[in-house]
Length: 270
Image (cartoon, rainbow, N blue to C red; front, side):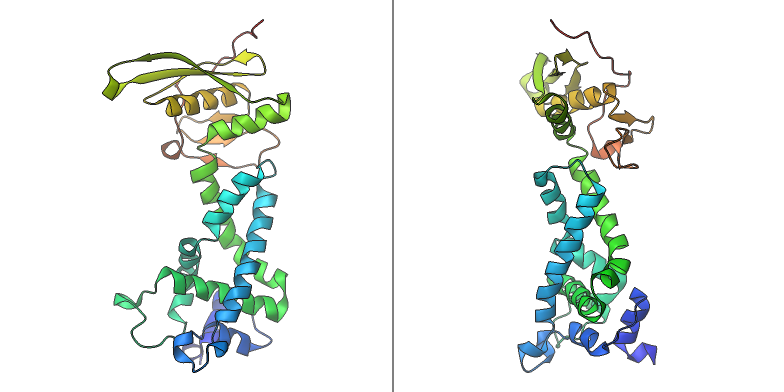
């Protein structure tokens, strides 16, 4: 019966049928229910962690062809974190199927992040050993892509300075120069206006309650003027440069907002 067979439940969840169901049974076996830890899912967890890392790195590489190594590493760190893996495991329902000793589940049957994440990693390894990488990718990639895009949107895309720096290095072999135009107001409520110069051109200044915020807004205005991004009335920022992945967006509440007016590029300085 499906309701009595955890392997059959996993097969239904993943849309995958095991050639060797014992692999999945082992993937659900926590060390607390075996006499010898070698009989638990810990070895599968070790392998699954590596497979997860490989697939994640490949997807980041494919989705964001213009990201530098440091930015890719940040996105990977978020995507393969215990918190994210535990969320995916719970989304799939794996944490309800893992076999545990008494007293390990918390109130309401919830598992610590580490155990829920281990269930995902051991499941990845079980499918990988059973049928290879493609079989894992078929069910894991859609879930990973969601996490990867969320990590990119909440991290990289709000760092418009980083995007502008990559553009400047690629186009002009130089870095943007941020110029403090004005600072006013009392110490507890200062306002800063900063302009950015790229490739001999100075763009409209951005304004913020800190130099960092003003620089981010100045970078966004420059990116808009360079037609690398567009900002919709809703505040959504979308990359329009042909080298950027289509459909990459950052909500305004996650990214520094630009002035309402359309940015204009000033005349190149002599």
